[in-house]
Length: 213
Image 1 (tube, rainbow, N blue to C red):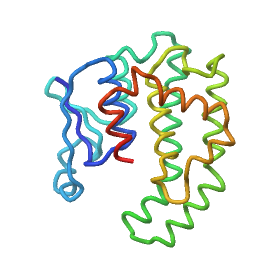
Image 2 (cartoon, rainbow, N blue to C red; image 1 turned 135 degrees about the vertical axis):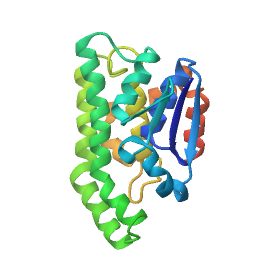
Image 3 (tube, rainbow, N blue to C red; image 1 turned 90 degrees about the vertical axis):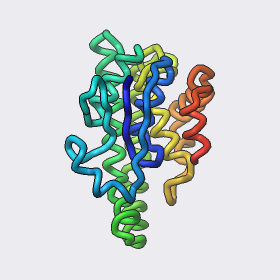
Image 4 (cartoon, one colour; image 1 turned 135 degrees about the horizontal axis):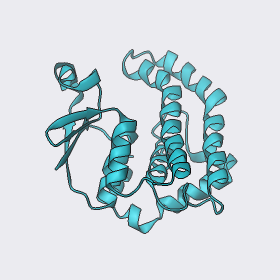
């Protein structure tokens, strides 16, 4: 049995693992660690980070590595080297855009400096929001002749792209709503198609993510 460990809130780094396993009906256990318990639990984990996966009584870390494992286990990766590279680019893109917006999140949540957070968020919106989502849209156009799935079939690339798009379009990020997608028609259409993909949208994890928005 696979066990996944993360904080007590939904985030793309853990959700793409859960969604991948669930999509292929692979059972897993899931432990949520309350924020207040993190300091006393942090040293229990490799690299002092979450998410964590326990598999065959051994502990593993780092989102990209765990995503590879879960995708391969779920037949949501690709044996074709070129298509595997496309999937990896989407995973790396998700990490990059997260790093871009992270300072504005840290300023509010850790430092409680809301003026600083507002300033950093405005800078992110001005310099990075449309730019980095246009990178994703361009990758989709280059990779998919029909602007459907990144590799021609549903994969963890689509799960990851959808989950990050949902994060930014959900209205949970201050100063950001789904209007940015109006400038990215191919990506907007893609996002709507994945959101309505029956085999994906009927997953318990998918519904849980939506209900927490």
